[in-house]
Length: 480
Image 1 (cartoon, helix red, strand yellow):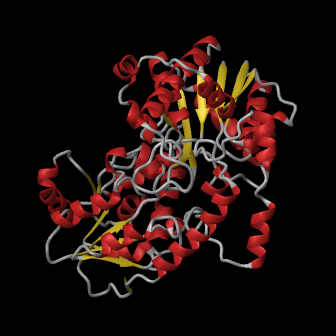
Image 2: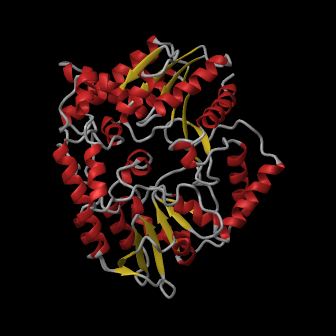
């Protein structure tokens, strides 16, 4: 079997190669290619002795695009693959309009269209010429991976995305790019049912927190140590120029801001953090009658890939407020990872909406979900948590857990949104067996790695490679 591994940034290029080498040794694969993004992933592959068939990388493909002067027909590809604009929206460095770019300029429509059609043409050729038989990635919010998944669908090449089940805190393989169908590699046994019941009980008691809770980036304080560390790590430019022959660091797609932009971003984040902390927050929710809306990280896969129609959260908050009961409050909680990133105007405009208030991030979402009449989200884990607590929730997007008890999904008719909210809020039926079955299914069909270990890198690399390799062997066996 011939495989393509798609690595994100960091040293995942090397990790996927180690997994590929193990699968070659075990005669599961006959050959593999690796596709990397960024300097660290590139060098982690090039500086090691691996037996890959080909090392593809974003930088060389992007350089080839910049040197091209004619491009495939957008009309042809749009009729074949769907909205090119929606594909472009999956990549925060290429297209975003809900936030300001931290550096560089927004690409114009011709650039966006040409780049998207170029990538489709490029990956059609790569996958066809290499006779690739399976694609594996852990990357979602990236135009290359979305396009590869669409090309795979047309060429009938299996495409697996390795990502978290959210609950339990483990990794699974999803078919396709949108993380809606978990690959079934095992049947549910009694041990999985018992693990599911234990998870529900411990979560209700507040004793079960996934590894990713509180794992988001923190805006660093202005201190001598942080400034010194900042200066020490701002010189990848020479290497990038020499290796990839790319030197326009004002181009957001390259992803390496100029030094002046890095300094600006550093101070801007701290300024925005200070403004956020100056907002008026509700601290006591015990006597309130409210809906709860936790803000999503944005731009990120949860909106720009999984639910692009709802990427404008300011507009969505207005729609929720307009359609929910007049006497109830809408409480909005910022995602901790976003403090310092959103423009001040975003918070100002929300604060001006009557009946909408912010709650501080240190108020546990567990408590907010428990007290809320309804938890509203796009694709967020809050809906899953509500189901675990036997509380009602409403999703605008679609996820692999949308079928859980207590979760009500937008039916596509914005004119009846108020009626949909009421139906969701008034629900009093919770099928605990279906919840246990979902959790047991996730236990049975996942690898024994939590989010932090499986995404950011297990400290014991041999254990990570072994887990991934054994799991992928089982995933590949479903193709026979």
